[in-house]
Amino acid sequence: MYDAIIVGARCAGSPTAMLLAQKGYKVLLVDKASFPSDTISTHIIWPPGVAHLKSWGLLEKVVATGCPLVNDLTFDVGSFALHGSPTGYEGTTECYAPRRTILDKILVDAARDAGAEVRERCYVEGVVWDGGRVTGIRCRDDDGRTVTEKARVVIGADGRNSAIARHVGAEKYNEKPDLACWYYTYWSGVPVSGVEFYMAPEHAIGYLPTNDGQVCVPVASKRSEFEKIRSDVEGYYWKALEAAPTVAERLRSGRREEKFYGTGDVPNFFRKSHGPGWALVGDAGYHKDPIGAQGISDAFREAELLAAAADDGLSGTRPIDDALAAYAKTRDEEMIAMYEFNSQMAELEPPPAEMQLLMGALRGNRAETDRFFGVIAGTVPVPEFFSPQNTMRIMAA
Image 1 (cartoon, rainbow, N blue to C red):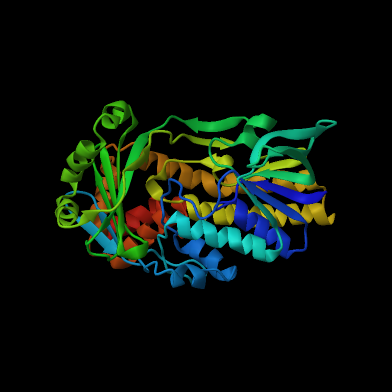
Image 2: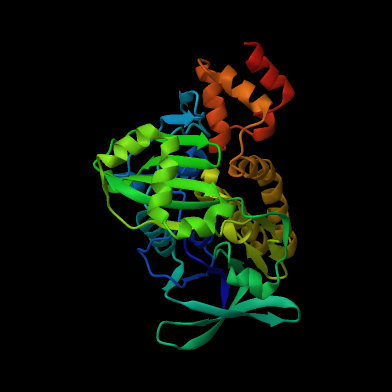
């Protein structure tokens, strides 16, 4: 009998397992993958996520892999570009964009080192119910052996297509349609500097320095173009890069190191993330378009929230179902403003006139540009920066 079973061992699941194991709980962490392994990702860890890595004692391990520090940010809107650095979070200003083959292995190892039992290549086939309450999982190992494991709480950290969410019937809310589709690949022999974003009508382009001296360059288009894009991904990719000619010039002098990775499956939703004996964390409970690259940092934040709530419930400080409900409520309150802002960016439409005026007013104003970048990075609250009083003050200056 475990205190907690966590399904999914990437950026939300492994930290949750690690934090609970550090508190002395008996934790089982399972994943259908083995590690190291790759997954589609936004790569960037903004300062809030880096602060979590610091507090967990894991940042040094990420830095030791050669992943470059990428504090400088460029946000190009076509007619001009803003340059600066996101404001910090709890004294942390660093940003990194590690490969997931590296980051996820560090996180899984940290959970194991904390005392969690880790089972890789373990496939969850269902949950166990007892009197309307989830009490465990049925899982199959790589040899085809099926076992049932019991726990006081089962946590789904298994991504946007969560099997746990499906098995418990977790309904979605605040849904928005797929807005964009994404393809990316990795390049060598190109400058490794800061993070760059290029926003153009119907396209968004990123430039993200990562491990091994390489740069990940993602390209987005409207979701309605996905089927056409799939028929000629490379042609589409280079066509979209016309919106960022300096990036295209760099890439032509470099070398593409891997295939194109991409998806049109980028739904925007919240899911009910708690119930009798179960909870959801990370993309399983809250998913959004990757345009703001919030996924990893959000997963770390939610892991902290859920581990604290589960500790309250497992220790008897409060009824566990009440603790899990409080976690989900806090998650929604903290994420909703960024969710709406992120969805607006993902529409890939020309910004409204008010936003264009605000962007123009930020030119030459480094302090407010850094705060705007802080909005993107999750260090400055969206409602605070875009309040009428603040935007009027910036434009007046």
